[in-house]
Amino acid sequence: MKRVRLQSVTLLLVLLPVAANAAAQTRAAGVTGVVRDAKGIPQMGALVQALLPDATPVGQAITDLKGHYLIRNLKPGKYQVRASAALYMPSMRGDLRLRAGAQAIVDLTLTTLFEESNWLPAERRQPDEPADEWKWSLRTAANRPILRLADEKDVVLISASAENNKRATHTRVEILGGNGFANGGLQNAVTYGEASRDGHGVLMRASGGVVSGPSSLGSATKGSVVYQQPAGMFGYSRTRISFQDHPEIVGQGGGNGYQAYTLDSAEVMNFGDTLALEVGSSLRAVRMGAASMEARPFVKLAMQPNEMLVFSYRMARSRELQGADDIDSADAPLPLAVLQNGRMLQERGLHQQLGVTVKNSKGSIRTAYYRDSIERPMIAGFGSVESSGLARGNMLVDANTSTARVMGDAYSSVGWSIAATEQLGQNLWTTLEVNTGDALSVVDSPVIGPKLHAGRAKSAAVGFKAQMPASGTQLRASYRWQSEQTVTPVNMFSGMSRQPYLSFSVRQPLRIRRFRLENMEAFLDVTNLLAQGYQPFLSSDGKTLYLAQSPRMLQAGVAFTF
Image (cartoon, rainbow, N blue to C red):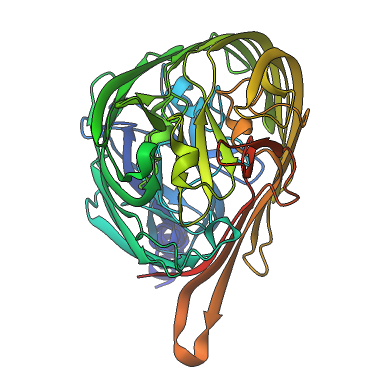
């Protein structure tokens, strides 16, 4: 009897650790998922590790033919999951909390060095550059499309799950007015966007309005479609087709009605980790009695030998289209032209630039040498012009806002550009740019003409972009100093040249829960608030007009997103 009891106790002591181990196994957690590359192709042989918060590895697995992995027997707690493979940058998922008996699904995307560097592109968009509220951005680690709204923190990542291929759609309605500090009436715009995880997407925008006042000739009607699709060499292509009808624009002889058609296209190609190429063109047709059609190609080449250094070359024939990012707006810019002696003459120029960019985790600094040849520079103006003042034929006037475009004399420019961008805090970015080169200046003012002269000049600009997390307010502000005698920017093809003197924009989300308005936004855009750089001259009918790098403009309104 004692022997039987002794054997039972011995058996119990043997079975207790086994049972405890089995119980621990049932309470253990796990992590599983799929590892893919930037094009969504499953990666076999990738190493996936489960790490403690102090980066100590506690489990690992190798992906199979379908890119699948499974890490078992993890204790409940907080982990990081990291995937790595040859020729790829490691991919990390942090702050993963595992519960007892649960199995988390974590899909990871491996990217090459160049794809990762797109977070800090060689020529990043400046904080003060004007931008449409809807745009594509292919700067995620997975090279997937993002449909970004005005509030940059409110982004919609199309299909964050590796197994989900759903499409996302958004519709935005805008009501705005106040263009040109004049009786411009109201303008309405509707933008529709749809994008999918595989890189395909479309943006469509239509706008029109009602203009009041005795001098009103009607309001502009605009429409555009942007289409994007994946392309070979780990890149993508983008195309925009637009149409604009401007009955308010008056030209030579008092005729009105300016129409423009544009076909913009671009293709981005990444060759391995160190080389990227962008090519494209803009085909622009304008008509106002006479018609004109011209093509404006561009090329951008960037070579990145390491994470911190980028060499770049850029050639562009148009200020409006210098790269694929310039087609991410659903609102196409108006081609600049004048009617002279029965011919439509469009702005024409050639810009070439060699640059070197040094980057770090929070910003970059770029030094560039450029050479410009401007054949038909279009200069902004302001003032009330009668038909007799248009007889010379080098000016187009917007009768609703009293703004104008004048064609100046051809000139060339050679100079240097230094630009630095830095993230000062979690929600504050700044940009500083200094340019040397040539610009057109007014001489012997006021005269009928006016007389313009090209000469050496300098400019300095600073821009800020801030976001307030508590209220969601976004603020962009810039000031670009340049001699007030000049009427064209120094380095005309620079992004900072588009916002002269003091300009700013404000975006404020409005959440009126009483009326269930959760996705409403108010916005205000002001250009050249202090009306600096105005150069007076006399028109042929004796009226005083002004040339300016950019006339003072104001737009304000509200937008609804569905």
